[in-house]
Length: 309
Image (cartoon, rainbow, N blue to C red; front, top):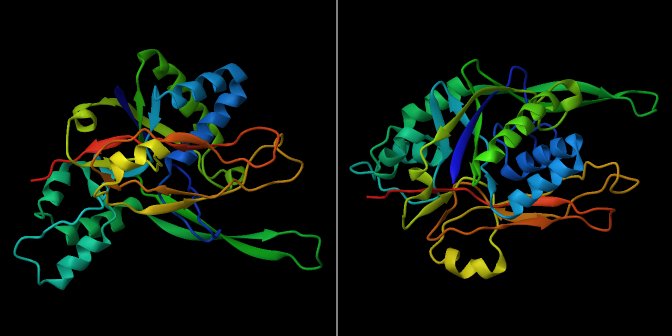
């Protein structure tokens, strides 16, 4: 496979809420990214959308979650593994710093796994240099005598920070298609409240990565995407697996699906950072109900081979 990294710069803010509008995450799940790209493909024509979906279903194209970068440093999710910290087992401050970390710089992953890692310094840098959350107050006009204010959580990235994601390609000829879809999405935006201009981005960098980190043999593979194994894959990947479950839900954004807006079926999937003894393919799951067309949930991970001493 060929692994392409897209670095995105968000000049305005981005709304990536959870269960409440006030929330403001700063990462994008792979299923959200897939849905956004698929919608852009549908805008171009049904043939492009069918080709994109077929390539995804047949593992010819895979997507990671979108993770933070600061300056030249790309970050990966903290592996869900126990890390021994030499000579500091009794230091509660160090323990709390390691527990608080959510992301690790790629170039320090080996150091982190060995326990020789300045968690306090890295957490301070990440918090100060990535960006900040804010609440925007808007007003809903509902036909009542008085308007109703509501708050929207927005994340603003600092000048030298943003998000990147990885696309794995089996065929070189698909590279142009993916770039065109990402470029088209940059004008539409990703996340919520796009009509207000939120979620629009610039492609800051597009470059090929060394495939060794993804394809070398290991006894531990960390998922870089939200994912869910097929039933016949569970046995091989779940023995001694260390994982976190993430509930995925949301509404169906399609005017052709039903006369009224409806929700997707809820799913629980393994979050990025989950670690497994073997890789799995996952699948594209139909989370529609009784609407007019299928609604797909992406659940196919890209894996990072961890080197543990």
